[in-house]
Amino acid sequence: MAILFAAGEFDQVFAIGAVVIAVVVLFVLLIIVAVFANYFRLWIQSFLTGAGITIWDLIGMTFRKVNKDVIVKSKIMAVQAGLDEDQGITSKALEAHYMAGGNVPLVIRSLIAANKAKIIRLSFREATAIDLAGRNVLEAVQTSVYPKVIDCPARGGGTLDAVARNGIQLKVRARVTVRANLQRVIGGATEETIIARVGEGIVSAIGKAEDHMQVLENPDQIAAEVLGRQLDANTAFEIVSIDIADIDVGENVGARLRADQAEADTRVARAPPRAAAPLPSRLSKSSTLTSKRAAPSWSMRKPKCPRRWPIRSAAAAWAFSTITSCAIFRPTRTCGSRSPAPAQRSRRRRERLCPALNERANRNEIACRWSRSGSGFGRGRS
Image (tube, rainbow, N blue to C red):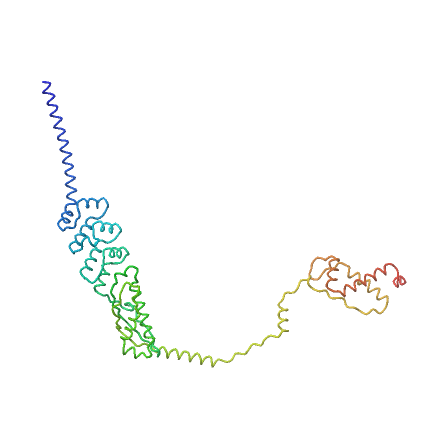
């Protein structure tokens, strides 16, 4: 009985383990089927067209976050058009260009168009470089195959105004036929430069004409002269032809300029002559400058020397010396000052500015001392 019971338990454990293993295997199979179903469509397309993209490449694109649909369709497009891996079009190169931010289908379409035209030499490296530079590589290829017509000036921009040597103004409209140069698309100038250069050449050619009638009779001379200047240098285009679409005669600019000049000369001739302003004399000039100058301060003024009055007698001389000495050495108010100046400073200033006054003061001081000592006529008077 014990042996039968142990055998029953072993069968039960084995059955549970078999069920668990079956569930795990079924889950793995479901995952494999889901993955295979996700990549089966693309893989079968690549396998049937000979693109050479395996299912492991598709799984790697998923981990590298590359759009596998774009890569597979672009590779199939290139293979069907006859572009093989010898030209550098591999799945790795397409993935690298996609991750760099390029437009993979546009590059493949431009390569197919250049290959079908058989007149354009364009490699995969050049196409990817043009695409990453921000230019439309397909449009460049189409412009190379089918030339483009550019209006000069641009539509809505008016006309090109130029003046011949006889002064007649001409208004011109031109059309420039250009073809893209794929080797100079990167770094080459655009349509605006072509329009500016052609306009400059037309204006220069008309300005060299002696008469405007020559331009009206032979407008092809302007086109030939402009074409000879190689205006398409360092641009992304090649100028095929320049056609003068329209020429209109404007106003007589030379006659208007001559009339304006004659009127200006007439005004100058009729204007009354201007009287010459008299030059100021030296005296008047110095007096004017003196009058405009500010009045000097009291310290810069020279004191006037006292007038020498004739002394008739000894008594008058004694009285004059006494009064003068007292007036000179007495501290008084000076003109222009509010406070009395010291007598010593006033005396030094007087001695420096007026030698005559200095001599008179010395003589008066001697006379005053002599009278005070009681000698001379002063003592006899007292």
